[in-house]
Amino acid sequence: MKVAVGLPAYNEEKNIASIIIKLKPIIDTIIVCDDGSSDLTSKIASELGAIIIIHTKNMGYGAAITSLFAKAKDMNVDALITFDADGQHRVEDIESVLEPIVKGEADIVIGSRFIGKESQIPFYRKIGIKTISGLTNTITGSRIKDSQSGFRAYTNRALRTLQLTENGMGVSTEILIKASKNDLKIAEIPIEIRYHKDSSTHNPVLHGASVMMSTFRFMALQKPLIFYGIPGICFVIVGLFFVGWTIQQYMESGNMITNISLIGIGCIILGIQLLITISIINSMIILIKER
Image (tube, rainbow, N blue to C red; front, side, top):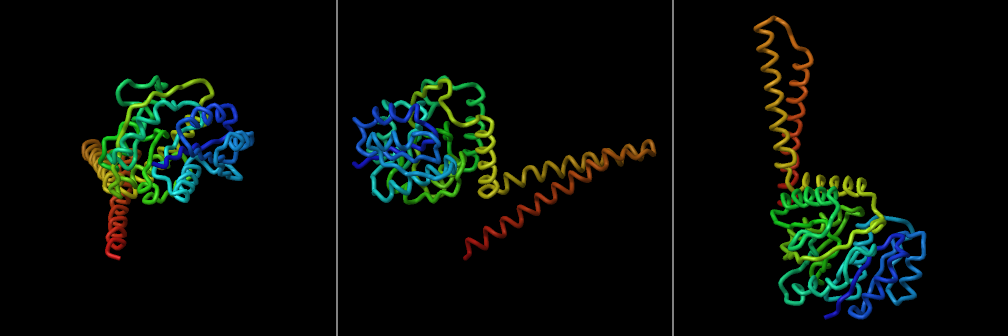
């Protein structure tokens, strides 16, 4: 089996050499996507024998993953393993993540931090990851524990099926949603992860916001009834409650509570707009399917 490891890297000159040196005894093909680094990341990786993809400017994690997918497809590998270049993932876990693909049991394998013995993940990261995983599962109908793990393995079929458009951190969610739509089999394998100071180049707040926005965008397209319908109905109910309360107060005291009435009317209008949006989106989906 022809296996490649793909490393998305941005200013990782401190970590890239040690990772490639550890990978070389077990993996013949190492691909590094230098996503606009301003340091020696690509030079170090090239001198150590890795295949280099260079983005002239920083385009984002999703763009790096897309480039790695494209290169792996061109090389016609049987499997691609994506592996973070910041030193958090263990080379020792590659064999177990690859195993379900070797056995033909999965098209995508996720190295999960939440199966078996949980890794020592900072609390704020754990909450964020589990929240996003819950939203992803709502869209896909799956039970994935760690939707944001960058340690994954893909079959050649998965690489050729998935057409990615997300340039940011939301690509992890996009992959799972599109895999679910295309009936690709997904498995999770427990891994250990090392969190240490300066191991991540991503601001956690910006990272979380980017992923949440992408997840909401995909939910709006894939599950409009949930994304628009439930809030729409809630807004209408709340609006009717406030309007009813205003009418009751006026009938009892003769005084109009202007603020409450305006909130009620605003909620009803917003709720109706959301429900109309559902109708429009569903109509578009039906037309697209018919075509």
